Amino acid sequence: MPERPGLEVFYMVETSVPAGVYMVDANSGEIIWKQNREDDPAWTQGPSGWTADIWDGSPGIEAISNRAGHDDHHYLLFSATGKVLRNPFPAGCTSVEWDGDLTRELLSANGTKIGNFNGKEIIDVPELQPNPLPTASLSMVADLYGDFRDELVLITILDSGKRGVAVVTATEPIAKKYVTATAVLDYQLWLARNMGGGYRSVYDRELQE
Image (tube, rainbow, N blue to C red; front, side, top):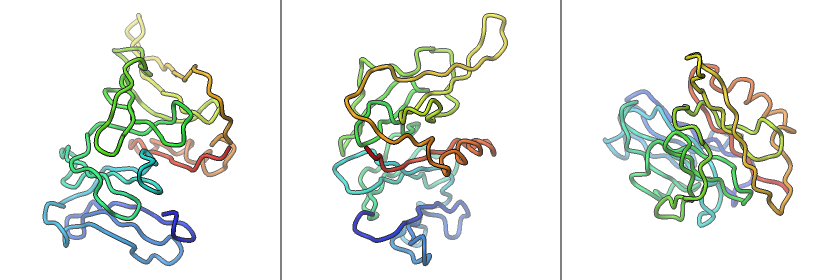
């Protein structure tokens, strides 16, 4: 939230009674805004979501969560101030830093599609196909090479029938330079623990030229 000093924390609650999403002040724990079962009985469980700056039409980050358990494909997109920007928001998307602009792109269809959110819908970029291996499954998105853009980690099936790992990176040159996330200790720690419990997570940060 650019207009507030300090940091904020966005989190989801899975349990049914206070199920919902909350934005709180990182220093005091004060609830800045929330949407939970008290506000809308459709909230029964909020197990899946993430934050990233995916649209330059709304200041700060955007936040995404579903609200009715692991089988629920009904996601909501919130602005940094708690406004619902899209309901429902397409399921199966994850954010990625791919083309070098100030907002993050959205991966879908097992990493074979990439698009940009324009405030209403996701516009696919047809000439881009980050995952060129249709039989591979997307495992993780992270900046592994330290060039600030993300790589895709894919699980592939080798000719022998065994599993293998492939890493795909963006090759299109860009006109700007940014400080890489891998220079930040917090990002290094996130890389080490990401998917440690089986859940894929998203790390977002403000780009610095």
